[in-house]
Length: 276
Image (cartoon, rainbow, N blue to C red; front, side, top):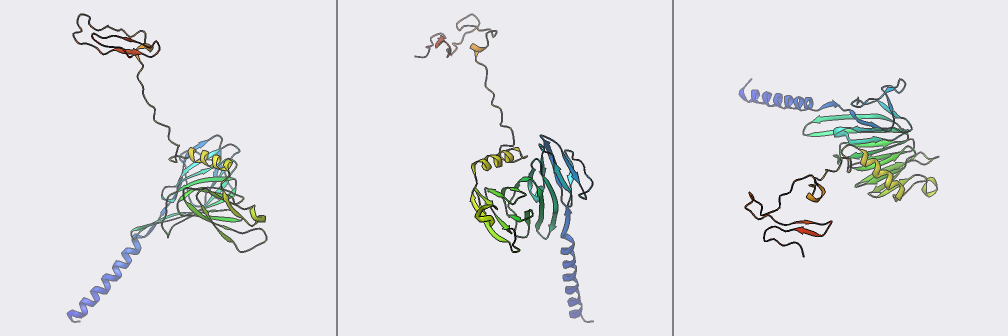
């Protein structure tokens, strides 16, 4: 084989090797939903939907797992790139139908599908790329999120805050879903329009409940305690603190006046003036 033929073989082989290398770098990572906290009550988890055990803080739930809360229990979850945050409300059953994270070729592709069989959940979802998806599925509706804060119930009601989402709703007796765009500050209400679904401004009571759940989530607005502000105790509230009036032996400097707001009087330093 001549030199030109050798070059052609080398180029073809190099391209093939590069394609194989790129294919290898695209890999599926094991995504998990980590339990950040359990509050108010208790919760259980299951890997097969049949055998249930007590859910513990710090547990890492995988695809196919389910969570079930009691009548007063909240479970806050951290999903990393697949979320990041989800709160499972009391008396709720949710299954991680899909929970994957594929990395490689310069892009991270996540797939998250939560099956909401009963109850309610709240989610904070970062903006995701067009190849990724975050969905909440109920018996009659599917919410598709691209980056927002949402709250959904198993009956198909979905409220949206700080973003927008799509709801695909199939009314009773129909087989084809209808698509609804739900902007920030609005809610999809399945019972409206004669049971065919309608998008309405989020009711005040739902806004309050939504915000309370967001505040409870780890990392969500209001979740972190406000920083305390230190303020020194003034001398008039500390009677045991010794006070040497200005001008005494050993104090060659003139001290500024100290004004007591309780008595509206001032201790006069040498040459000082109290407040007018």
